[in-house]
Amino acid sequence: MNRLNSSSATITKICVRDANKPRDFQIDSSITQVVTDVSSILNDDSIDLVVEVAGGTTFAKDAVFAALKGGKSVVTANKALIAEYLDEIVKLVDEVNADKSKKAVKFGYEASVCGGIPIIHTLQSAYKGDIINEVSGICNGTTNFMLGKMEDGADYDDVLKEAQDLGFAEADPTADVAGHDVRAKIAILAKLAFGITVPIDTIPCIGITEISVVDFAYAKSMGCTIKLVGTAVRQSEFGEHDGALSVYVSPKLVPLNHLLASATGCGNAVAVDSSNLGTASFTGPGAGRYATANSVVADTMRVVNDTCPSSPFPMLSSSIDIDNDFVSAFYIRISFQDGLGIIRSVGDLAESQGVSIHSILQQPITDRMAADTVVTTEACKYSQVKALCELIEKEDFALSAPVFFPMISDY
Ligand SMILES: NC(=O)c1ccc[n+]([C@@H]2O[C@H](COP(=O)([O-])OP(=O)(O)OC[C@H]3O[C@@H](n4cnc5c(N)ncnc54)[C@H](OP(=O)(O)O)[C@@H]3O)[C@@H](O)[C@H]2O)c1
Image 1 (cartoon, rainbow, N blue to C red):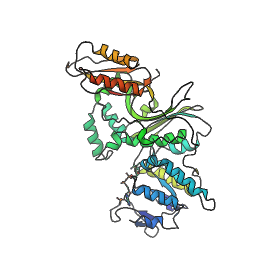
Image 2: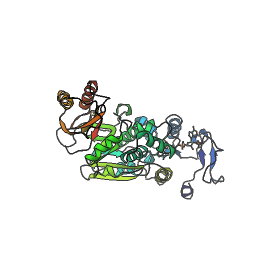
Image 3: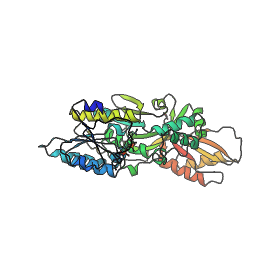
Image 4: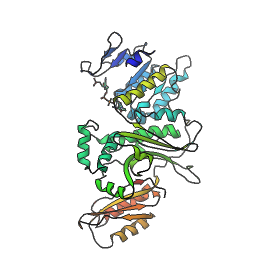
């Protein structure tokens, strides 16, 4: 705030719910007024930029849309709002800016994805002469923290409680552990990288709730770890990455030497694969007070200095098809009661779905009533593996629905 107030920008009003709440920072009341009615900002013609960090898609949506309609630029950290109203925001910015007699409004949202990593500006500007084939990212620090602890042997429930006690996870952790937070972020990255709006409710989303320490034991035996990854990738139909766009969120088996494996703790990482650059990676803090504020202030300065792109999603809309039935090699963990012919049955079912098995791994059985085995597949469609797992679940030997997710592999 001090940095902004000492530049050519002045923060004249801050809107909060509770003006009397104790804050751990000073506000110079001769410059900045604390208000609780957002209309006192929206109706103030002397204000030309609104920073929205309230969150949610109700109050925040009304404030952001009203600000833009009123000719005020907006800086926001709100991925849920952007992902849900992406096309409406782009249309509104274009409509407002069509009136060339008025100062153009800008829309900055660097803090909305991977809070402290400048991935939005990188995708807005650094890939103009390139063709992006894939963007994938670990975009949720809470789940990355939890998976890291599970890799060290902690149980899911214990590690969720630890994340909540440390303030990393909400009391209702669904948005993080079910992958919804990553889904909003990968929808934004897909729009930036490919010019395509993928409705968030069409994006397959598998969270981390079914992952257990046993998966990490198998992952380790394969030289891998498990990360929750948002992926937007062009499939290869006739050549390299010339096919439909697939966007999905899922745990992924990641080789330990892969750059996505380098994001530890609450860290985030994004990998961008493109025709000219090959794979470039960006790692850093995904959230937190200072990392997020840094991105918000940087965006604000860009608006003030008129260096913010005039269109929030500069890539023109393209006609790439969307096909979220993505192709990958898969990891499948089957929990079973031991008996004869189980592997043969799994093999028959895989053949019936056109799924080719790449490997079968099994730790020595110590409890014949509750054992598990892992099957990895050659590249196949998500729908094929899903159908296979539904068939396996119906078998007498199956103790539960198999746990399956894609793996980063070169086969
Ligand atoms: N926290 C992070 O590290 C982080 C990182 C990246 C993006 N974000 C995004 O930033 C946004 C905010 O998250 P947060 O964790 O910072 O939330 P937060 O701690 O709850 O802060 C929200 C702020 O907005 C104010 N507010 C909320 N609703 C309001 C209303 N109806 N009227 C007036 N003021 C209102 C609150 O006022 P009071 O203080 O009076 O309650 C509070 O100051 C979300 O979109 C989130 O996704 C956060």
